[in-house]
Image 1 (tube, one colour):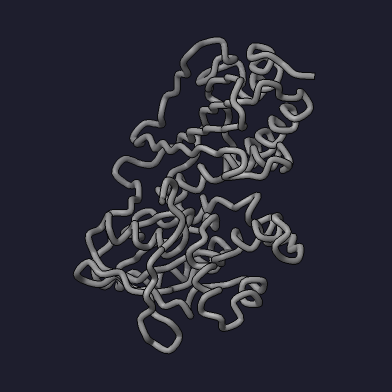
Image 2: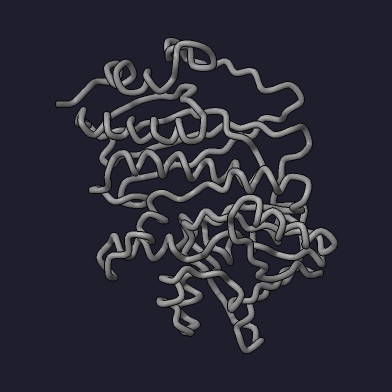
Length: 322
């Protein structure tokens, strides 16, 4: 059984929004939200397309949670507290009610976990592939939002958690490797490092979440900050599955460092404040590993375990890259 646009809004998405502002029961074309006094508004948008960002046969609830979480990861990198989101649903000509209700249930689970709600959005149909757009909205005390552009020479480079599990999870889902449930969960349900982001406010000089690949995102920081950088590959933290995969194979280690979909936080900290990172790691219960430093000039370098520089021609994934 399929549902039309108005039935989808009424029965699927309205329960996620609530009767009061901002969404007002989804009965208006706009939402009205009042940011907390003394706070800046932080917004981010991601688009997910069937066959590009998720597999056609993936669980609808998991797709919904992944869509929300990758956006919350961007808010975490800014040090923002999530408040709500706008949803764009571009469905196929026929979308089954069972699938839609599972999708909404996935959003409801994460709304409860992250204390947010649906502010509004739009629903259309007729596309050949399912496409989903989500705009996450957060707030941060005025002037305290973290960006990619504040790194300085001498800053230490840290990354949270482990790198490469998103890639390993996708390969496992595709049947290219043995089933690895932990890696699959890392790919499908990444953990937005929201608590870490709040703790890094006032400490990190630059921050980004690892979506395009560790090396690509480090390069983004260097470009935005107009500095150089150096990453030591042998310092990149790996899970047991990642260590087994890389197994001292430089090409496979590079693959883990360039494949993306990890949604860990990559950030820089002035040398004189670096000791505080260990205190934060203990406070949030998350490993934070130093993997390099910010340098002068504009060159971004990657070094292997032997101390020799590695020629990395493609730092990570790029859409529209030919």
